[in-house]
Image (cartoon, rainbow, N blue to C red):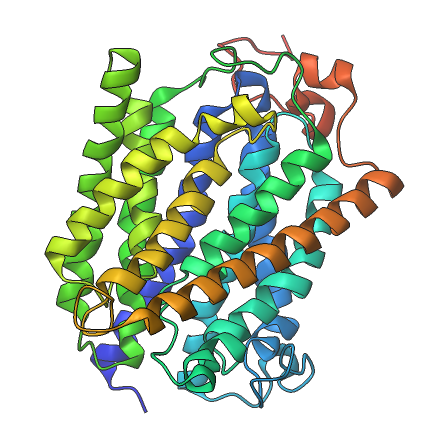
Length: 405
């Protein structure tokens, strides 16, 4: 049974991670055009509502398996969390916040052109077929959790969600960007953020909430690594901001606030799987690598021709892969250069690409099914006019005009 102090931290951490989804809504909302803000933010809030309900009904039950060869847990084993005690309920609440933001992250790849109803259908199906099972693979006794023992080497390390959250979301984002196609007028330099302060506010809320994301799970571990995780979450993120800004300065001649915010997110993503298993020095190095790599990766969409609107692939998939694979080289005691052998890198690679391939394939099939049946993308004329009024009947900004006058 959790003591009062530990239980209090569990509640606070749950609230911090829940705040990350509205923070993501601000971050994404500022990056889109002014006539798409409501639509963009509603996809995050819709995810919060839908996935919150599904997790309580059956998602939590699916997130733990009785055998590592099971695909997922039984959705009816604790349906609607029946029969759970206080400690189990706070654990379920904490887990729900991870499921919610993982789904919300995907929406950034289809900004400015997606219908709300089909998005919710996708969110519910993808969470059921991908996130809930993957959570059981990584943390609930599934094959990823047991991979090291099967291969006779170190266990997979994914402390707070490099594979389950960021790689799975980034891979799904790439699939949906392909399904919905390019925005009207897609070209480098055309799509500019409409509200930079909103982006910075969102990034700040995400960084704030990320301490619940990374340090939060310590309520299950007696807070043994809370100091290391806290320092690493600060250090890697700060180093990533610097790495991104250096690339911007060298490439464009200017370091931008959008670059600083994006660099912060890349660093947070990269340190997520590694936060409890690298020293502060190696966390700084990881952050710098993630910031540089993601700053370069966001340009790939123009070269390869996929319209990942808000760079979910370039930031979450790329930095998630870097953070997960980095452990194979620098994890404390088990990394190739920190006292271990190739075993850690082997299991990290299998886990990362296993989740990537599964999530991408499932998201592609789900997205194509929705597009062919109910239609996923708005009409071209509605996209040009702005999806807010068409989809939600609202405008983000009235500019002082009273429609009733």
